[in-house]
Amino acid sequence: MTASTAEARPQPARISGARLLVRCLAELGVDTVFGYPGGAIMPIYDALPGSGIRHILTRHEQGAALAADGYARVTRKAGVCMATSGPGATNLVTGLANSMLDSVPVVAITGQVPTAMMGTDAFQEVDVFGITLPIVKHSYIIRDTADIPEVLAEAFHLATEGRPGPVLIDVPKDVTVAEIEASVRMPRIAPTSTAVPAAIGDAVEAMAGASRPLFYMGGGIEIAGAEDEVRALIERTGFPSVCTLKGLGAVPTDHPDFLGMLGMHGMRAANLAVQECDLLIVTGARFDDRATGKLDEFAPHARVIHMDGDPAEIGKLRKADVALPGDLISNLNALKRQADFDSSARIAAWKARCLANRREHAWRYDAPGEFIYAPALLKAMSERSENDLTIACDVGQHQMWVAQHCRFRRPRTHLTSGGLGTMGYGLPAGIGAKLAHPEETVVVVSGDGSIMMNIQELATLKRYDIDVRIVLLDNSSLGMVRQWQELFFAGNYSEIDLSDNPDFAALARVFGLQARTIERRDQVDEALDWLLNEPGPSLLHVRIDPTANVWPLVPPGKNNADMIQGETR
Image (cartoon, rainbow, N blue to C red; front, side, top):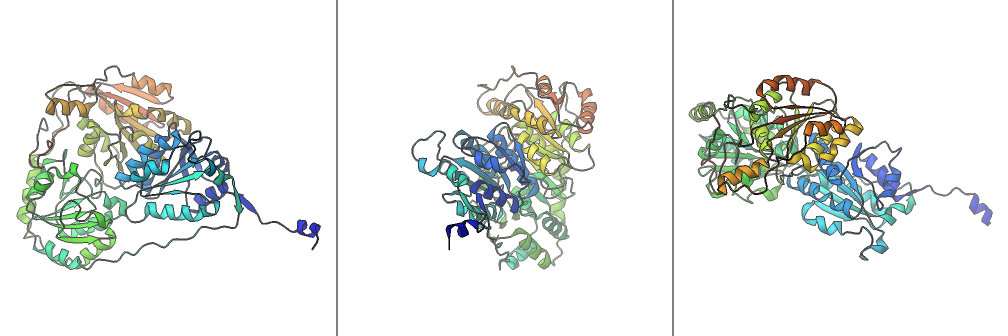
């Protein structure tokens, strides 16, 4: 064979690692990526145009990670964020920790210096693999271009399978520049089994014999998409229910047998029910300290049925009398099929007491004073639309007011940083949620402390004309810290004064948003109409009482029945 004959033969089509990675993302169904470019990840950004994947340029990598988190929560698909090496990668860390603690599927792709330079303290080299080990479900460094398809397939599977969580993929620059045959394909990974445990019969027997049963619902219901099944079981049994912060929306908050959120800032009727019940049916919850208060005095009279998608959670903090690990949908359906008992007469007195407590401790919204009353404003806002708003909330007093007073009839309409308590979460999460579901009305509720953590993302709203509405509650202080200093540190107010805040409405207008400021109660109705009906990204700046506190409150080290009521009435 002559040289000229060999040269005439067609050569196999080849593709760069970067283009292969982007092609794999598209094959995995990724339609949106949040990120910020830089040197080490530049080959991947070079491959993005023309791929069909929408890239959203946030103004900070933390914003990208939190936007991917919000996108993932409302879609139940893995959200994707990207950043370059060094500071780009380290700026993702808070977002990844946030997703880890709230079990949110996120895939983070970071650029890295070339493999030959790793370990040499090269420009913008950071061991992001090592830094993030405790805060991701799994992590990879791709050292061979041929491994890209397998790593991506496995990463997305791990992020979404079982108990979801973030996965990190660190990609050295030479891996993305190197070429490989374009025919390489991704493997397919089979889902895991959804077998039902044998203890279902024991659970049904416990439910049939209880006289004071109670459902304790957590964020695992939303993660599993098991809201229809848990609602059907609640209707079948007639048992009352409570939920955690992340469980809001598992059943409608206006359901006749729903007693409210439990825990540190839970409703009194919910906390009393937990302390008095004789059977606690824990569904997708993990006995978090903010929900249980003093753990060894939590539900002291109750046997426990614990259902969770993560077997490691069962028995971790509270012994389960009946353990039901595995797929929530399968377990709930099995319970419903076998729950052929009639408990209405046996639990009638219990339900009457629970509902009487709910009526007795119902919130009043006619608080005295001249300031706008935040609980009343948030309640009115959430009830103003026939369909539920999607509310992305920041962290602080306003976070608890939203949980206590807003209406949630569907899961995945309440986005909040539960485990990590990340200030600055609300705005980027709202961006992710709106881009995932543009037909939904998305409202960000923030405070004057939290908004400043990621306020640069107002520019992202304007650039892409993302129709997110912002309610900014401004008490000129770090409100939750101030409240704790008032109650537990003898009023020694240390570094909580934010009275030198900027004019937030003027600042929003500088970013190109519509904005208004209100400070009187007679302005609320018209302002909410404007906020929810005027199209386009907008901000409503609401001045509230600087001394207002969140009530009720379980003090640290106390059980949930030992609540400080404050001015709840």
